[in-house]
Structures are given as structure tokens and as C-alpha cells.
Length: 192
Image 1: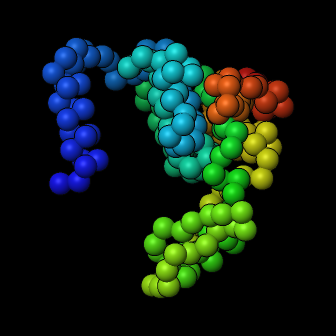
Image 2: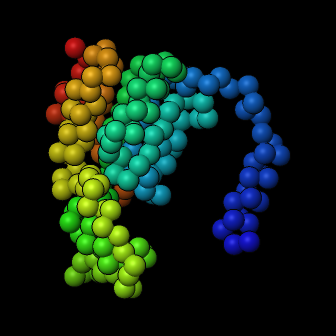
Image 3: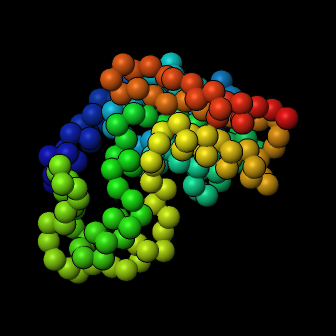
């Protein structure tokens, strides 16, 4: 058994020993959802003041409005009653460090973990790789404010998203812990 697995299982035993949340309802109590990045430096419970049962938190690389993220938001609204959504990207995001082409090239040469330095991304190993990466839009980010706006617009314009759901756009600053509004995104996400 790995060290990480042991640590997770020990932490879970401690958590479960005092567990008192069995009666929380399935719908989020505060009726909102957050779409944000999977980056380990982000703790939506802390930066948004959440307790268990308060809100849905949907996470993926970059916090992007992928088809699957929109699927989750639609389920969150349609079946579980969320009434407001947030798109929250962040500063110093890894999705800003590569392009679709870089990812496709890295995967084409090896499926092992790559490394990055001042001169860019490098593969550690040779083959086997896969050409399947070229069929995926990796939703990389060039500019955080632009990507937040793009994602809010994509969500609001989706045929399955009702017009009465406001979508707010923010960038989380990993250096200060502050949420910084992207006014153009919030404007695009208005009800109407």
C-alpha cells in the first residue's frame, strides 16, 4: 500500500469517526454552483465560505466550461435547484503554460509525465505515445479574463441553460486569496 493511500484512509477513518452530516439533503442548501479549476491551491470551501451541503463545486483543468461541466451545471439546476452559477478561474494557472499543439506533441512521444523549465515543456521518455491527443480541445488559456468571459458566454448561450440563471465571472488570485470580478463576464452572464 502506498504512503498516500495510507494517509487518505487514515484521514477518512478519523473523519468518519465523528461524522454527523448523514441528514444533509441532496440539493445544495444555498442553491448555487461554482465551476472552478482543479488546482490544489484552490479551496472553494474556504474562498467562498462553504460548508458541506451548501453548494455544488465542479472542478476540471482550468475551470473551463467544457461539455461535461455544462452537463453538470444543467443537472445542478434542473434536478437539484441551483439558481446562480459562478465561473472562477485563477492566476498562475497551469493551463496558461501550454497549447493544444504542445500537449498533442507531448502525448505523441510518450504517455509518461512531462516536465517544464524555462525553455518549455519536455518529455522524460521515448514512447510509446498516442496520437489520440490531437482529437481533444485541451481548452488552454492565453488570458484569464478572456477565458472567464468565453466560458460565461458559452454557458449562457447553451440551449439547455435557462435565461433566468445568472452566471458570474471571477478570477481567484493565488497570491492574495481574493476573488477579482471580470465585469465583462458578469455582464454577459446577467439574467435576460
